[in-house]
Figure 1 (cartoon, rainbow, N blue to C red):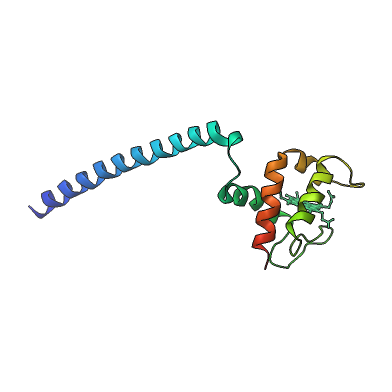
Figure 2: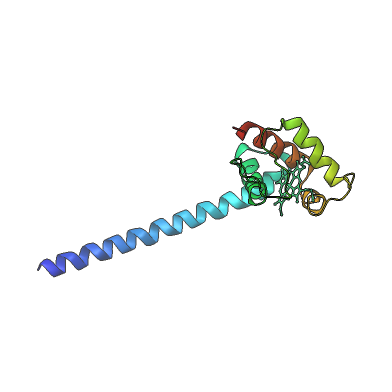
Length: 123
Ligand code: HEC
């Protein structure tokens, strides 16, 4: 009796989980389609800027621990960061190893949003 009760509950929980997962998956899919379709027309959201800027921290430590050979980018105003990134993108910086290629991967709007986000996130 107790066992039957238990298995009944488990089945209900399982069905509910399946339903939830399907709904969540659909929401993500719809979000992606809407996001892609609307992307170029809209200003870049803080969330997107944050995602784009997350990759910078892989090389530029953001907590003050700067690895050797990688210049710090914390504490820079947004307009300085933006100008530096645009210069990398335009291949105007001599002796660049990676940033020119990296910067080319962003639109000018994304560069502006990344610079704004990083400057605002500075300690
Ligand atoms: C793969 C490692 C790596 C990643 C990821 C990376 N950088 Fe860099 N960054 C460098 C290196 C190395 C330099 C030195 C210039 C060069 O060699 O290209 C540099 C230089 C810079 C400079 C110039 C700083 C100065 O004072 O000369 C800025 C600004 C900068 N990076 C911003 C960013 C931003 C913003 C991101 C994220 C979108 C980012 N970097 C991601 C490695 C990286």
